[in-house]
Amino acid sequence: MLKQLTSLAFLLSSGLAHATVDYHIDLSTPQHHLGKVTMILPSGDTQATVMMPVWRTGKYKILNLANGVREFEAQDSNGRGLTWQHNDKSSWQISNPSGGEVTISYKIYANQLGSRTRHIDDSHAFLDATGVFMYDPTRRDEDISVKLSVPNTWKSFSGMEKKSAHHFVADNYDILADSPIETGINQDYSFSHDGKDYQLVIWGEGNYDAEKMAKDLEKLVATSQNTWQGYPFDKYVFMVHATSDVRGATEHINSTIIQRKRFSFTPGKEYLSFLGTAAHEFVHTWNVKAYRPDGIATYDYQKENYSDLLWISEGSTSYFQNHLLLQAGLMKEKEFFKSLAKRIDSHLKKPGRLEQSVNASSHESWIAMSGDFATNHSVGIYSEGFMASLALDFQMLEDSKLVAGYTELHGELYKQHLLPKPFNSDDVKRLAKSLTGKDYNNWWRDNVEAPLVIDFKTLLSKAGLVYGYPKKAKDIPETGFSSREKNGLVTLTRVRKDSEAWAAGLNVGDQLMAINGQRVTKSRLPTVLKQHKVGDTVTLSLFRRDRLVEKTLILAKQKDKKPFVKPVKTPSAEQKAFFKAWLGIDFPSKEKKDDNKELSDEE
Ligand SMILES: [Zn+2]
Image: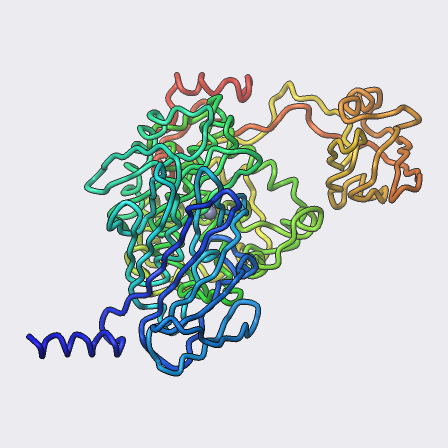
C-alpha cells in the first residue's frame, strides 16, 4: 500500500500521468464585469510560461485578449510569491525555483458581449476560454478542470463534460478553448435525437417561443445524417443570448453561441433567420470543427493561422444551412428560392467579385477590411464561398451524372480528414475526382484561384430554375451610391465602383444636401429621384469634410422590383432529377409552384 502511494505521489509530482491544470473563476460579484481567475499548474519546470490567446476560435481576427488582465500574481505551493515578467503582450514568464505547483491568479475584465469572447454582469457570464483562461503552452495536451463560484440562482452550461453543477472537465486546453461556458439566470430545454443529447439554453428575455424553438431545433438536427455519416459529439448545446444591440453567432466543437436582439424572434421571417443561423452553426460542427483545412488544423493561439480554404469553412457552411432547413421542413421552397435570388443579386452587384478570388479572400481574412474597399475590391469568404460551393456542387452533379455532388464531398471530408488530419486543395480536388471521375485542376484554377464568374441562367436551368426580374418591373433612376441618415443628413455609405456615382467622383462620407437645388433627406431621396428620368444629368450639392462641393451625376437605371429564382413551368425529367439530387427534396409540385407566385406573376 505504501509502495502504491509512493509511486502515485511520484507520478503526480513528475507530471507524467494525467496532470490536470485546474482553473477556478470567482463570479460572486459580477456586477462590475470582473471575475477572479485562479489557475494551478502541476509541478514541473523551474520556469513556467502562461499565455492568453490573441484570437478566439471562429473569428479570424487578432483580438489581443490579454487586454483585460489585471493584478497578475504567482505563488509557489507554500503560498510564497514568485517573481514573474510580462514578456510580451500575451505571455507571462514565472520563475519557480522549487519546480513545485504554481498558483496563478488574475482579475479579468469581461464586458465584450458582442465579440462573444467574455461578458460578466449581474445576470450571467459568457466565458469563451480564449478570453478568460490562460494556458501553459507545454501543457496544452493535459487535462483541465474548471470550477465556478457563482450567485446561488445561477445555472451553468457548456459543451464540456459536467462533473457537478458548476464544474466542468476536458481532456485538454483546446477543448476548453472551444467550449464556452454560459452561466447565469437562464432557461434550459433538452431533447435527444439518434442517441445524442441536445440542450437549448437561453439567457435574456425576448419575443421567442422557447418550446417551439427546441422542437424546431430537433427537426434541424435530424437532417445532419443526410450529409455526414456519424457524429463528432455525444451532446450538443445551443446557447442563445436574447439581448440588445448585438447579433451574430459562433461555432464551437459541440456547442454554439447565437446572439440576437431580444425582439427579433418574430415575425416568421425573423424566426427563419434565427433558424438559418442555428443551421449554419450546426453545420460547422462537422465543417471546420471535425474536419479543417491545413493552416488552421492545430490552432496557434498566438498569431494568425493562414488558410486559402476558409471559403470552404465558412462559405460552404452558409451554402448548406438552407439545405438543412429545407430538408427539415423548416423552410419552404419559396423561401429557399427567395434567399438564393437575394444572394445572386448581391453577388452580381458587388464589383469586388471581379477583383479577388475566394482563395485570396480566405488568405486575407485576418486583415480584411469592411466598408467601401470590401465591396469594390474584395469578396467575402461567406458570400463568395457560398457561390463557389454552388458552382462546384452543380459541376460535380453534372460530371457524376447526379451520382455525387458537393454534399457527398463533405461526407468524404468527414470520413477521410477527421482531425488531426487536415485537408488541402489537392485533397478536395482528389475527392471531387474520385466521386465524379473528372479532373478538377482547371476548374479550381478558373473558379477558386481566379475571380469566380457564374452564368446563373445556364447554371440554374440544370435544376429547372430561372433567375430574372418580373415582367412588370420597370426601369427607374439609380445613383450608384448607398446612404444612411446621420444627424439628419443623407450620408453616403457606399459608392459602387464603375457606377455613375463613381464616375462623378462621389465619396463615402459625403453628405448630400440637394439634387438640382431641391433639398433631400433620406426619406425624400426616392421622391426627388422620381422627378427625373433614367439618363438625366443632375447636380448634387454635398458637404465633404465641411466644405460645400458640387458634382454632376448621370442617372443610371435599375429595376423597381427585386429579382427572383423560381421553378420553370414544365421541367424536364432531367431537371427534376437534378433538383432532387441537388437538394434532396422533390422538384416543387404544381401546387407548390403556385405558392411561389408571390416571387413573380409571370413565366
Ligand atoms: Zn460560420
